[in-house]
Image (cartoon, rainbow, N blue to C red; front, side):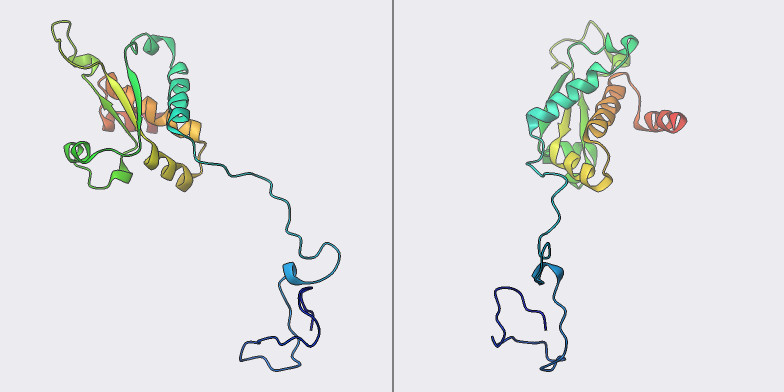
Length: 175
């Protein structure tokens, strides 16, 4: 029987009940002795903390910068906010029960309903919900930059007055 280096011949070893003394036992490679045995392969990637709210904000601004000129000129004044989850009031207003389902939201009047005569409203803003975005990123394995850009562009579509159905139809046409 091969023993790990910390065990010596004759040391008591508890064996599973289906094994009897003298039966050959193969240990996992990390416990076998010999050159190069027991050394795990080197890590090819490192894992750090998930992207912060500030990093999400930078990703959102980078997505805004990629929006072409005819549309970009109509985005002045839109602010980007990052929150961990949508609050209960927002979820209720949207008819959503599960906070993990909402990754972004446009707040404001769309351009097709805006008027110079309307005053006293907050400027339009886009809120990205960090935790649901992180979960979707992990589940789908898409690039985080692409996921954030997709959500930002979707919310910008609402700024231009497009409904969810209209945006999904446009996305289907592009695919």
